[in-house]
Length: 382
Image (cartoon, rainbow, N blue to C red; front, side):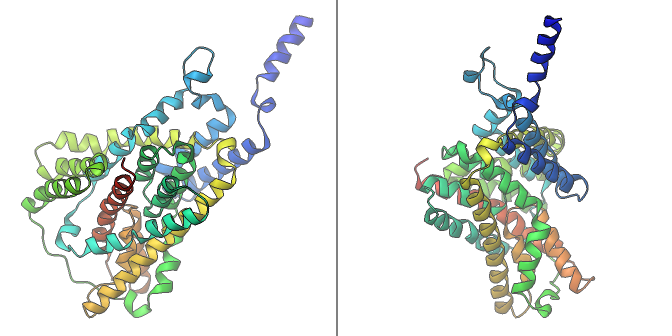
């Protein structure tokens, strides 16, 4: 009888109920909220579902991301090996290749002024950098946190790993991906606050046709120019342009389809679950995380505002030929930010189609955020 009691007692104590603390229950609740937003509300489910589930798993079974040094058999947890690919910058770079393979750079080529709007939206990153230093972060940690303002999860993970800020990688990545998912909620109030009804109703002229030769040369030229000036951007900008060259060359259709579909989704699963698994209660529920979440929001709002204000300046310079709303798409959340520009414009005039115009700044924002990360790495000699 004692054997049965001892066995049942041991089994009972192996359940999570005897090992979880209040913080784990808080994070489990947060994971369920994320799952609700992803599934019921449709807020970027491809991002939030794996992140939320990784968050759920690590707060029920922390050893799922345990390193080999902390285990009795010398074998790490499943998600530890996924996370290692994040630290090595492999998964963020592959994500960029998939984004390049899916994205048409035509609107950016047709309207080069979009580069300026994409650059203006990076103001949020650098403003958050100085604010983070003021809040007590060291220079490298401040740089890793501020890149959230680009609303670019892969770049946030990439830079945090390169700057040795792996302790902050979880909160940074979750904040970046969360703001990417919440673009439709965060951006419209800022856009409407900074523009007039008349400006939001501006209809832009159709973009000129872009030749196949231009589309093929663009990724090659951008790679040469950007990576020559900032070689540290090669893993991100290089992979982005390689994916786009797959798309535009027309001779490697199988590679383009693999990069934009099967490989992309595999990487999203690995990256999302591993990022979610960094959000254990012990690592996540602290003052630094609160600061990171606030700084990320400030950076994102400032970046959106800077893009819109620069759009207003261009609107004035061109005598009303540019709708300022497309400036908000200068953040790196592709194509969500461009869709928001279209949605806000269509609310004022259902016949106004801004999506393709907004894709120019949006694609420029992807490049701009990678360049901003490269600038930080160059500053710190990485």
